[in-house]
Length: 106
Image (cartoon, rainbow, N blue to C red; front, side):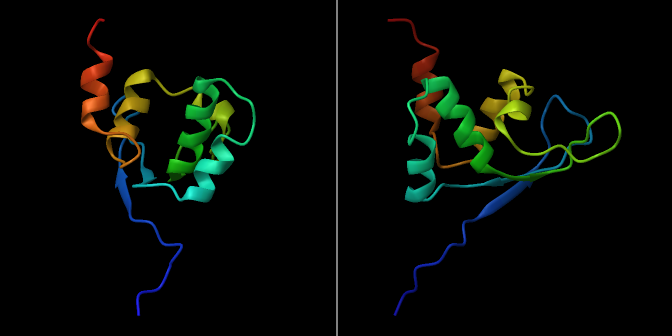
């Protein structure tokens, strides 16, 4: 019989704008993760940043003193827009059509 598991497929990659970076990205989020993202009355942007903190499982980014940076909203805000879109494209959280539609004017 199939078993319900907490395991989610991940992929390791490098952020385009940060040379030498290594980022492990979850391909998807669980329903409970989505609930956490939308559990507070946040703006859409804050909710998206919160989702990114859950999609990024690990990274090797460090502060000026060589200490590993936490994966949190404060640090995710430091990523460039192109890095954020790159991370999202590695996941099932958003699809290519969303990017195509976002570029069209209404």
